[in-house]
Image 1 (cartoon, rainbow, N blue to C red):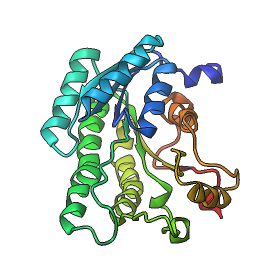
Image 2 (cartoon, rainbow, N blue to C red; image 1 turned 135 degrees about the vertical axis):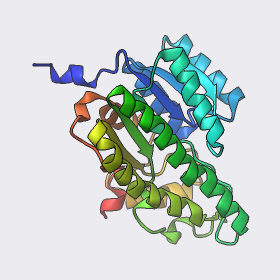
Image 3 (spheres, rainbow, N blue to C red; image 1 turned 135 degrees about the horizontal axis):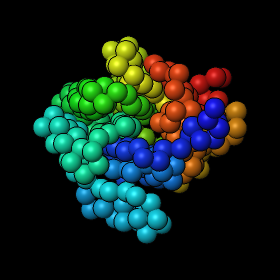
Image 4 (tube, helix red, strand yellow; image 1 turned 180 degrees about the vertical axis):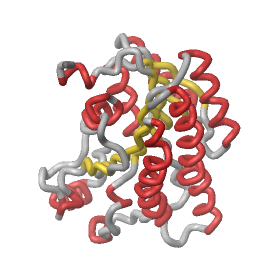
Amino acid sequence: MTNVLATFHLTHKTAVVSGGAGLYGRQIAEALAEAGARTFMASRNQEKLQAQAEEFRQAGLDVTALELDQGNEDSVNALLRQVVELAGGVDILVNNAVLRPMADWSSPAEAFARSMEVNATGVFTMTRAFGEHMAERGGGSIINVGSIQGMVGPDFTLYEGLGWGTPPDYFFHKAGMINFSRFAAAKLGPRQVRVNTISPGGFFNNQDPRFVERYNARTFLGRMANETDLKGVIVFLASDASAYITGANIAVDAGYTSK
């Protein structure tokens, strides 16, 4: 019988993380690499991504930066081919990339449509392409990075007096991601590909202290997420430790959505 701690190891696995240099992407890629996976980060911002990958390599982690325009299906397919050429196959996909073209409710409809190209259609093409590849290889794990804003409506009192917009497209596509993950889990499950969602809460990024105080009061733990809070759940869902979990949505939010 395998020791339970060994089931969390990702040695000999290959992982792909879209949007790997962002607030969440950095810790996601780092967690997968620390657990032993050969990890590829992919996004359009190559300068930032290459610098982050080099920082990881200096720390002894196997991380490579590649280019991806998630709004372009040809780019999605090219990324898959490139990783297969370099690593032989893909075992883990984390759909983390997000485009934020809308400022608020009054933004042009064209901005909403552009958001959907990446955040809805793009997530679909990534999941289909990599999911079919994994299924042909006999299994894999796909993790879609959602948000608590896909689980609940906005609390506008958090933003009073701050001059911040609250873009509706984010709520739309993050909610849709949860049910799309269930669809993909049902479609790919018979071929041993698992699909799950995590829904993080707010990430502390030196926001206005008024917002931070209000937000903290909405959580059970009294704080926002930090640079390590997603690492454990990512490795869990990527690894054999979660072998019997698919179609799930895990809130990583200090209890925000439980109030």
